[in-house]
Length: 386
Image (cartoon, rainbow, N blue to C red; front, side):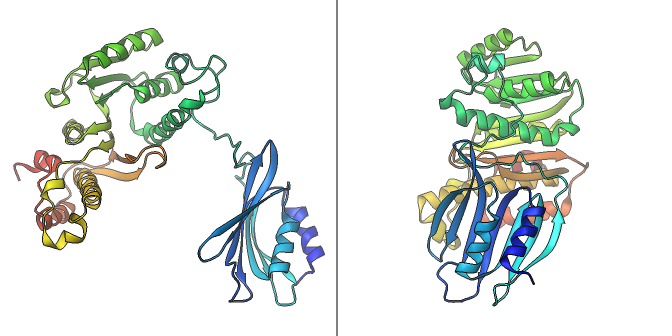
């Protein structure tokens, strides 16, 4: 075991950067503070650390300007009598303190892939796929100015676009070059333009993207913008997605973002029957099974409108995800963007990985459907002859 000063020297020699630390295990069980979390920040252009002290009912914050808070950590452990601190930075390690306030460094492991560009805070810059540089189509859509600076009022949309592109990057390998992507219910098409930019201008995959929407004026506006941007392989059509027949070209991916209610089911069914490699959907307004939830066993939920609505939405998306798994897709249900941006933040992402129907998963879903007496559109479309 080492003294405070010798421990401080060793830590300063080893650590060139600290990202986070958690001070825990108070020596006294009666201690009001249960743990202290340390997080790196950039405040007004300077490195700082936030010490957050947690009690059973609240948290108290303290910011200190310090490039390396090792001394503060040791002082905190000694003065407030905490026995352990787990540090993560260019090294991960555990710092232990005994009852005589002597220290031991253990569990040392170098983070070989650690980057010093991991600063967090109010001035943090995330490593977005769309970099901070002027992008002509984003300037014309009012997302950024001519210097490539994102307009303050469009920051949320900018983050949404980048989050969407991150999700596309995760499935990019499954999409062949020269394939076709269909966006069903494309709306104003911010994300459609971003998708075209990503696949054709950044990744050079030469994909064709077709958007469908029921609003004629929106379609005309989007076609005008696509022509203005020079997006030659991007076209929009004023058609109901329910009326779309088998495509002439090979469809690699179906996208549906906030398609209302059963339109999401119709889009997913197209993707399944066409054998699309990837299906990505952010559902919206799941009204279909809401009036069907009348069982007495559900009364703790169905007696309250807001709970009933949420349960109906979760059940609907759960059914959709399970159907995709049954039909041979590896399926993930994930958060699309933070809740502060929109409550409609669930994305269902599915990648085709096998053919045939998984009978065991189908039996699980049948049991769920029967137990609640639910009729659901995608289920009926996929299994109407079963």
